[in-house]
Length: 363
Ligand code: 13P
Ligand code: 13P
Ligand code: MG
Ligand code: MG
Image (cartoon, rainbow, N blue to C red; front, side, top):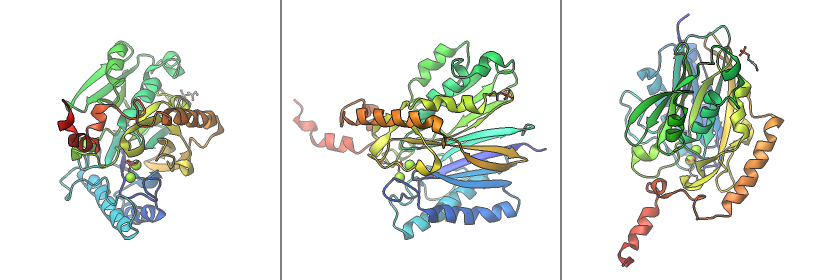
């Protein structure tokens, strides 16, 4: 069987109400546009989901990653959904579409992209994570735990095919360079970089025994494309599971800790990442707190059997409670750091304009 490509491409083309949620008409527009692509056989399968105000296109096909036609299709879907959003006068119409015309790849145009190509195994469980009111650095901590922390992933200790560890491809988004580090030997080097979640992002993870791809994350930063604040780069990632890769439960376990991430309210605040069911992914309190959903699928010859709404489980109730408690605690800092983000992250917001007005008053 030909290799399968899973493409997850997402954009915010208009929020309902404000930045809280998704209007059903946008999902319907996307489904209507993608349906014929499946009938014609260009797509093997697709699902349209949402997390907060972000529209998530999940597509399977055989054209490989960064395929121009698939990227153009996603772009056209977002443009059409923008028209639907315009008619409803939703908030931030076309927010993440930063360029006017498609030029070969959707990368660098605003939408977030996570794609991987692999040979489908006898059974191929995958989990697609989608988050709102945060940024790609939010994945660094859970990805480290899933693929490098033996207290999280028993398989690293127990399963011979994982025992040698994983390679992490890291992107330095300021320098536009990447480095691949090997775990466990280079774990401390890895942590030195990825602990700095605003600059170094985990892009891909490979199993060391055979180089098999295990995970991939979107790393697009809207502010670096637009040069100003235009909304947050709410990220997605794809993780393959089981049979020599972390079990589904090991992949979910890190999210029982609602770690602090940046991107809450005006993309300018830090708060806990709350794991929620699909229907609870409507960040409304201070436009948050940041949310993450997990859609589980079994692939069957590229067909997306699912989604299973994985965080719709009582075992994540405590994480949600803790996230609410941490949200209360963080909120009490108001405009003070570390609730408000540090100066480098505020560079791209509207705050420097206000500072500019007062610059002559400094003596
Ligand atoms: P596999 O090695 O078959 O993935 O089993 C691991 C497992 O599911 C334990 O929870
Ligand atoms: P989004 O990036 O999800 O549109 O959020 C923007 C924002 O600033 C919400 O306060
Ligand atoms: Mg928005
Ligand atoms: Mg969003």
